[in-house]
Length: 489
Ligand SMILES: NC(=O)C1=CN([C@@H]2O[C@H](COP(=O)(O)OP(=O)(O)OC[C@H]3O[C@@H](n4cnc5c(N)ncnc54)[C@H](O)[C@@H]3O)[C@@H](O)[C@H]2O)[C@H](O)CC1
Ligand SMILES: [K+]
View 1 (cartoon, rainbow, N blue to C red):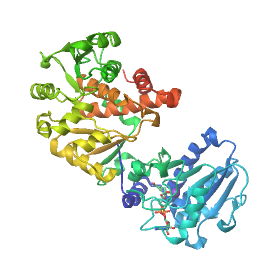
View 2 (view 1 turned 120 degrees about the vertical axis):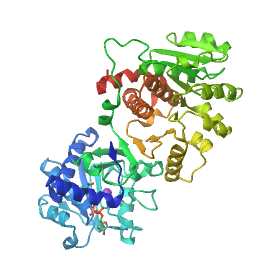
View 3 (view 1 turned 60 degrees about the vertical axis):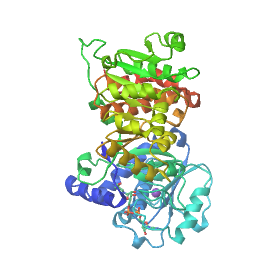
View 4 (view 1 turned 45 degrees about the vertical axis):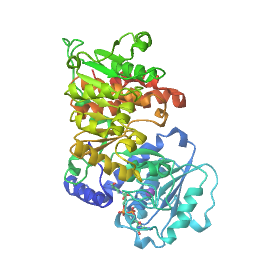
């Protein structure tokens, strides 16, 4: 898993990579520019467009000059807008790329900018080298980029955006941000989403090993990390090996949440799902999910189950007794969501009963009730870390980049998912997936990670077909496709 580093650590990482690999910093810049161009030319939506590249005096500008050369050589119509006064003041690598700029590249004066036709604006003005408050002279440039009528693609980071915190004034509002090596923390904060647009990560060959020595609790979860975390089953595995789980959820009028959770657990691979429900709701569950069993009343044999999921559609009234029974009698980690979390928020003394390494899956509203309100996402992340460490629980804070906080202080940002997943029942599906993995005998940490990643990937697959027509059931149908895609058996 990649570490997410701070602005100053990026420079040190580059230097370390350069000393290990024998590559020069200019060669590394070339790899970054080539990586960007590979992504750019694969974008069908830009096929007929020329490009207008804004370049600053630092290495972000250097990236832009290298991109200008490579795109020109590939037949793209390129114009460059130098956003510096004196080419002699360019950084070393930017200067080398300035010298290499083909004569056919048009240089445009920012103060006399006039352009015609369909253009993509590529923002290579300021990168992670930004320090302090934006200078006065940068304002017209960023204003111009933000008023540009065509698509804007920022390279490494939208110009003006700090790399590890929430925006503090003017910054480029990009449609796409193509970042190198690993995402900067600021690119993952919801407050900055309107600046970042769609986030794309381009690998520039810096080994994960190289970043190990840098101090950071933040990690970025990618597809390549997933297969090794899965348990494999064999020819002689039987349904008991795939886990027996209990889901306590559902109430009159909210049985859908439980149904989604149960179906999701089955599609994730659970062998036996039992839904613990109210007597009155037996027909609904048995009709909607014939593969599941049902139980009601007090839970007779909790020790029979490998994991328990608590909360989807449960309601809170009259549930405290059952929640207490589960927490007192079930000694292995459980998954708590929705109304299960709301009860914990109201009766904090129950928190102590939650088995260590259990997985709690709040959205921001539930988090605020359970842990407390935060003034921004950075503060929320800090509170989540503290909560996980203190209570020895795994906290899955749901959002565009769901963050998994672990009892050892690590916080893992998920990379899979799509905006189309913001739909009713999406969280119930996640609860079913995580409970399923726990029941299949995954370590709680891996159950949370695999659940979150596959859930997002199912969203991407379903979203590609259904777009804003995606409903939670589509996520469930797409779970098996995620196994095909990652070759998990
Ligand atoms: N491993 C990688 O990620 C690689 C990144 N590359 C690119 O390099 C930049 C970082 O380059 P650096 O030279 O350190 O800085 P910048 O170009 O981001 O910025 C320097 C530029 O900004 C001006 N400046 C600083 N503060 C302010 C301010 N407050 N207001 C206005 N202007 C400011 C400063 O004067 C300089 O002109 C990284 O983002 C990547 O794009 C490498 O190419 C490859 C490896
Ligand atoms: K930039």
